Image 1 (spheres, rainbow, N blue to C red):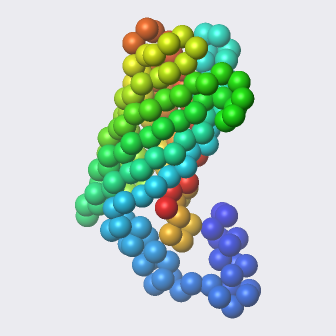
Image 2 (image 1 turned 180 degrees about the vertical axis):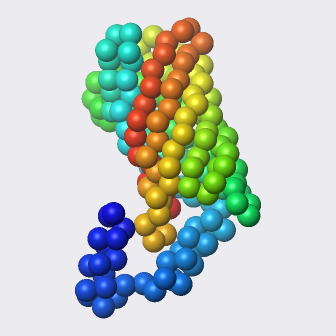
Length: 161
């Protein structure tokens, strides 16, 4: 819907890309392979009722196939306020399978540094890719648990170039 609105505005200004150019944007995005991204979301802890803003930055390498793809990524996240409050950080990496080009099923593992010390954390989730010219926006949701039994989940959006 947002993309359609942008195209209407661009068309009214006389600078809208042609359908061939839009298709070329998608092709170049897939074939480039190297992508940097920013994440914004909210992490929830059901047992304690806790919630925290989640900020992240990372790098993903995407390997495109005819109808699907795979990717590997490294990611760093800050949970809570960026400059004040508890300093809870997550650093890790992951792999993903794209069963179709717009759906990402992923798993990640990493280290969580928080008020309780250091814990190993594993995640599994799913996201849906929306293209805006050469930029991708992907709403996602994942569940995660630590080696000491803490469970939480997160919902957010990734913006990737």
